[in-house]
Length: 164
Image (tube, rainbow, N blue to C red; front, side):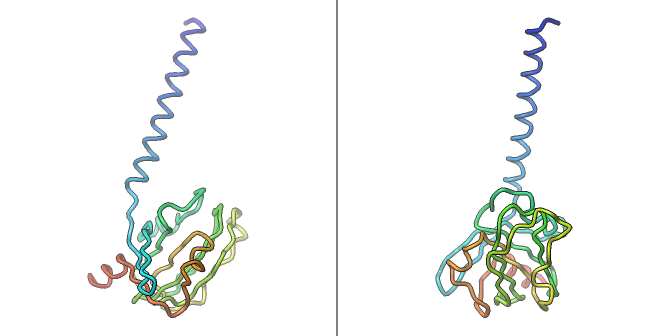
């Protein structure tokens, strides 16, 4: 094979790999489940990516360079202590813990990214009876004036309550 043929084969291989990578990313984006969060007091509506399985909750937003949609909802099947850590994060977040009725039980603003998983603290470790954590880009919770005691309407949480 000549030099031109080798270069051509290399370019074809590179193009094939690029198409496969973009296809994988597109499929992942299309397979994301979302849920709606309504803030009754302001009428604001956010679309959140839904993490309702152990593997999705473990992955969370780690390793991403930005938040898809308005944020992420970590949702557990039962109320309990549900601490969050920022391992592998590349940007800060606002964290909002909610009980089974969507009442905000805790808010932690501007939680810093923690690229080194070995030194990442847990947030909300002592909070009992939480069912969900809303992860928003840092600053959005304050912009939306979210506070402890607020009641949020979260579609995935409501539908989970109705099926139990």
